[in-house]
Image (cartoon, rainbow, N blue to C red; front, side):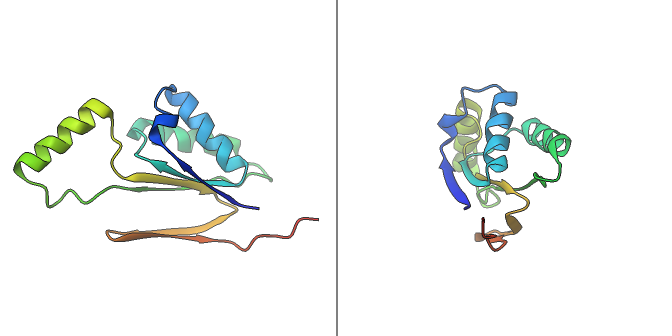
Length: 126
């Protein structure tokens, strides 16, 4: 059975970068698709991919990752300044990150208006 877990950023914000990576990777290894409020830092995303590549074996095929950022192209003046201040103070919590096990997630398609998660059919367990 595949589980979808909605995770608030506050659930990982107190963790070290390695702690965040472990928590997200452990969820993927348990066939859980995580929808994380906010985004990891770019270096954390890079490290997540690196650690994932080291863990790939017959049982664990890796992860699929998508980051959705709110459209900021139309922000100007005060709105852009406010957004930058909020991100500096609170961390980058705008948008969300979708992480799932590669054997479950067939594809993730995103465009400015939506994200689509296509999953493989669940295999019957005996």
